[in-house]
Image (cartoon, rainbow, N blue to C red; front, top):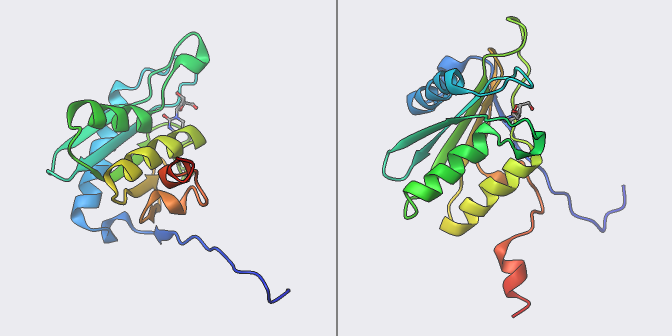
Length: 166
Ligand code: THU
């Protein structure tokens, strides 16, 4: 390995026992799980729920909403982030939880935000200048936690890049 380079590492915390998480994280995941009940997913049959906690303590939940024109649908995470921005523009999102009730009953496969949702989360994080803690779980099993969107979207295109062009 040549010495003249630097290494960018991403850290993920894996909670094998969800009950080891702080209680407010567990509560947010539970709201996300309940939100799957409102998933409109007749095309994929994959029910995703998400929930965000704001700086004022408010919790907003959302679920995936699909469309016969497939790309017109939206993921649970983006719906949550946009709802937060639309209803509470002054509040930053402190944490986001995402999970599913779909898949086999044994499945521990994680639901993780897609690329588009990562970009949406990044925008709100930059806008408020504060990190969004992200909790991800499958139908059951371990919860993976990252402290901010940088961990899921390293080297993201940020506000500062455009400003340098002024
Ligand atoms: N989906 C989400 O809502 N969030 C994710 O993190 C992964 C995917 C939705 C989109 C679509 O409605 C269905 O799950 C299958 O991709």
